[in-house]
Length: 532
Ligand code: NA7
Image (tube, rainbow, N blue to C red; front, side):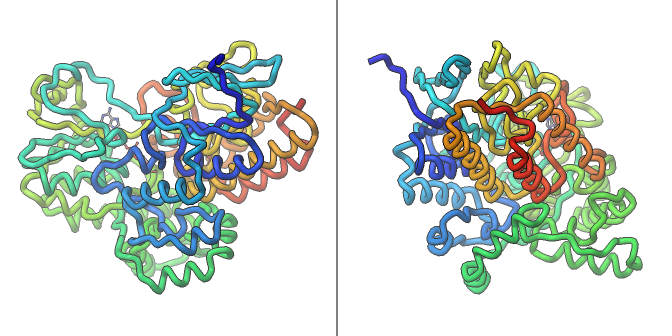
């Protein structure tokens, strides 16, 4: 036996998009799906930190490809917790008999394109060598951990965990002095739960976050029945909205309202039990800085009214970027947590962390003694997962080198010089701006159309052209000019990691425009692509 396996389509990742790709492509092709984890679910497999929960309603954040699945599955809460999402991923893998195509605990390490044969050679951590016609990379936009660069990690006598590499058996915080670095969506979810267990929790904050209460609650059976009676229409409607969700912006400008009217609308949104409603209160919050300022003032007022110590409250008030400029966080008792005696806040923007020490963490002005350190420091987002695989395309070009100054990808789908390699939720797609499961299904179906048409036309290769990449880069840049995202440093624009280059990592023109331009490119004789 040569040890070399042959398949038509190789899928990387058994997260929600990878699972659907496995389902979709095995109907017409021979497929294999490789997954680094020892279970399916991707994001919802790895992120098992306490409080991990989706911030989109689960009736929306779920698959729409199979009506029976929609009808039989029940979400226990409005915003599902990680264990329920992981359970759902496992259910889907079993129900559709996907496991026989999935190889777990198998990390793709290296891939090379054979130009003479139009085949990818894929090598894994377990020594597999698989040759395939197409690769579908469903590697996730938030899957490569961003680990703080400080020296001394090996000298620390306690334990260190990144939130996205959480041990399956959990962590016992009882009686422990815990330090948590990072106050993004993840940190804000985890901290209140850790605080309840730990002897003391010290939060190391570089930038304070805007957050609104999630309003999560047990599923109302009437709400569930209503969704189940209308799923087909609603899924279709979702794809017609900016965020591939039924959450929509009203027509009204904040400037058309009196201060009293503004306040009443914002107060209603804050208490709406509908995450993100605050950002959807008026039509201009995300595009007009002066409109945004009014909402940001409102959110800061809320922080000051919740946090009793005025010095702590002031430190928690974001003042350097617009609300929603970084993704709005959704919390369950985050600001209230600072009223506990066993929680303290350290401003590491004023005195940055410089090292791990034997006893804990050292900043420029103090040392903090800790038993457990949690790094809730986010991700080498969007490009990290692909750049960490040695992907060699045409003429020996390595993908990470090509992306050294920032990612390029025509329609966020294909990189010129890397034929037959498709990305789902790749760089320059509406990742995180649009509900990921539904748009992942859409992108997999779009890739399906491309492969079917290659087969139909007797062709074996598709590549993006440099002109295609440039036209998409221009579109990504043009639409980003109209949003307040430009005014915040975040993983959206590669500014969450020192030294990382690149402009806008995601497409902020909305899902319908993204989909329309993608379809038009194919309809117009594969504009921006070359097929052979
Ligand atoms: P985020 O949103 O990137 O947040 C990471 C947090 O970690 C944020 O507060 C960062 O501060 C902080 N951070 C990162 N590096 C450092 C260093 N070196 N020193 C101090 N603090 C640091 O990641 P999340 O995991 O919370 O959320 C990611 C997405 O998941 C989110 O957008 C949702 O879509 C779901 P900073 O703000 O950069 O100053």
